[in-house]
Length: 353
Image (cartoon, rainbow, N blue to C red):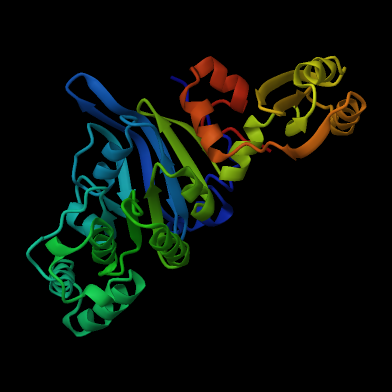
C-alpha cells in the first residue's frame, strides 16, 4: 500500500520554528513497525506532532491505531523504528516518557471499590504529583471533568458515562504535556459529550492531544489536523478541510425535493449539457434528486428552470457537501492506485502548494 501525504511543509510540522527549535515538536515517530508473529500491525509509520496541537488519529478497525498508541505510551515495544516523546525515547527511557503522558484508553481501568476522590488522589501519588499541589489538582480535575458531584461515590456504582469522566480526570491529574485519548466520549449522553468536546478544545492550548475516535464529526469539531491509518500504514495526513477539498474534485452536486412528474423531470434534467448524472427516488408525491454537474460547470439555475418548465414544484434545493466521514470512507476503501487519483500527491515530503 502506498502512503499519501497532502500537506505543505508548514502543516506537516516542518515549519521554520520546528526546524530551528526542535522543542516545538512534542512527538516524533519515524519508521515505526510492529510485528505480531509474521503479521505487521503497523509498518513504516512516520509523523510528528507539535506542542499544543490537537491531532485526530483515525482508521478502521484493525488498522493499527491502538498498536501505535500503546507503543507511544510504552505499553508495547516496537519491532523497528523510533518514537520520541518530549525528548525521551520510548524504548530506552520509558519512565520519563510515561511522566509526560496522560492516557485514557477506550476501556478505562478503574479501581471499582474506591471512591472517586480517593482514586484520583491515589493516581496523583502514582504520577508523582508534588504533595503540596495534590489538593489543587484534585479540585481542578473534579470540576473540569464534571465529577465533583460524585467525588464521594464508589466508582463501581457509577454509570458508564461517569466512569469515563473519572478516567479522563485521572489522565489530567498530573497536568501532563501530552494527552492520548482513545474514544473519550464513549458512553456519554449528548450534553456531556458537548462538555467533553469543549474541554478538549480548551485543553489544546495547554496540552498536546492525540485523539482517536470513531465519531468523525467530533474530529471535525476539535482537531486541527488528521492522520488516517489503514492496514498498518498512514494513508492521509492533513487538516480536515483540506482533506475534503482534495477529494471534492468532481462537479457541484445538488439535492432537490420536487413535487411533479418525477420520471419525466428526471429525463429532462439528465439531458442538460452540464449535468453528469442524476439519481432519482420517488416517495409518494415527492421525488428526490441528486444531480451531479460536470466539473467546471454550475447548472443550478438551468436545473431549476428545467424543473419548473416541466410542471415541477421545487420544495427544497441544497448543495451537497462532503464530510470527513465521506473522506474517511473513500480513502480507506480505495486501493493505492485509486487513492493516487483521488488525493493526487504521492510520497512523504511532497508539497501540496
